[in-house]
Image 1 (tube, rainbow, N blue to C red):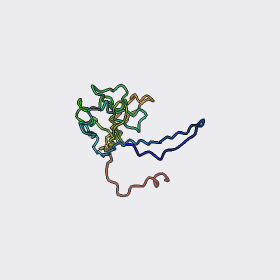
Image 2 (image 1 turned 90 degrees about the vertical axis):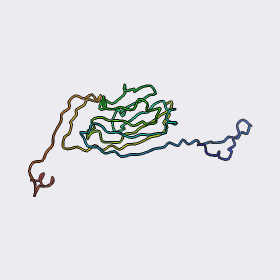
Image 3 (image 1 turned 60 degrees about the vertical axis):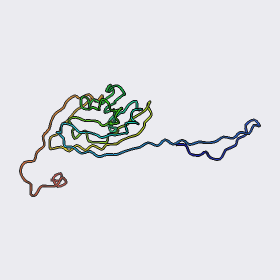
Image 4 (image 1 turned 60 degrees about the horizontal axis):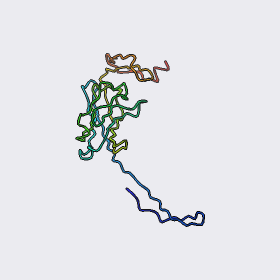
Length: 185
């Protein structure tokens, strides 16, 4: 959206007077926000991202990102197929989008086997020739049932070790010590 030009400015260069106008061009993007909650152990969770089909047909790609990670790419869908070459290893074999996502406008992401560590903000970013068209931010909260997966990765985010840990509390505690009391005894 172009704003009306300011009043003409004048300048004199080598005896020639010229007028110039300053235009300001604003690009407005739509940003939507959702919150999704799921229990750990569910088969999958759907992160919603919808745009009108007539608009999405002109998109050349849609990427899902989690900016909290060093490599933020969760999933990349191009017009003809997925491009998972730059995908963060944490999401390998766990994400999918509809094959016809860019034609239908349904850019939602399916995340399989969600874990507590998957909790965070995910952004759906459709683009046309590299230019961002809109953004949808989905806050995902995965709640555990006392079963947690501990993952050790190297600096390239390649998984080195993965262990499942079950936390449980036995018995009742009618007069439990607070953390500060326990530390000072």
